[in-house]
Length: 314
Image (cartoon, rainbow, N blue to C red; front, side, top):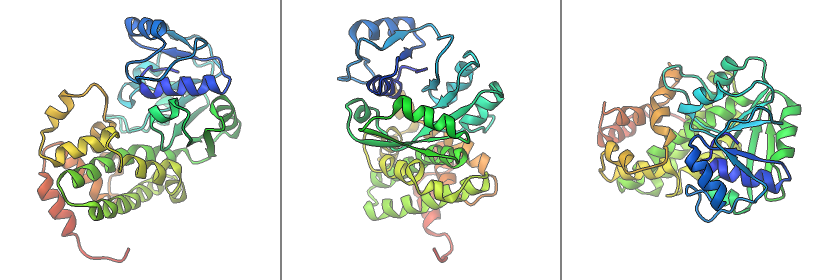
């Protein structure tokens, strides 16, 4: 597990329960030493790491698979340091700022001969670490790799579905964070749950349009990596992106919200990158979020403009 945040730690615990020999890599040596000694990660309080899970700040030189669980905007620098001798599975969600690349496009650029997959779905780290029932998707064009990752991670409580549309799966994981900011802002502004339900539904339509425009399939967006993840992220106050939207909807400044956090809300960096990558694809909600985050409009004006769009059939 490359990355010892909450999700990386939860996946390490899950993989150990599935019977795999697990190494959890942390960038900071002091942090790695603390986790190794206490068998607990402050990013995931209450979750115990089994003694069999090795914790280190030294990048491993070999593995059956590398699961990269770092924030998407930092993935390139770390993935470039990994040896290309094992499959790589991206467990981050988003689009890289500047290059506008999806996660697997970054890995293909760095390690063109290495098999890759993306692990994505409606998964909160705390619940996975606590062995509560969850389902997720491993998406790859390589069926053998899908089966390998499912064997390494899957248990009765963590059901892994394969998918051969990594583009659609990645788009769902990236765009849902942007829609979640909008959903939180709607509730934070006091506009009600009807408005949020409408926004989630129309946001799903945007996900489908972008997935198909980039070469994915609309039906992928209707599964765990799209609809499932969207519903979870857009309705839970523990979601980092939804809670950020809540704060913005209540009138808090973006800079103040970000300064008070130690975790990353991927939707902040993803929103403008997603809109730029979408080009001419019709994505009014995502564009409104990007404009608000970059101070090109206000929340009040963005809502008014969305509601004033021409009528149309669904």
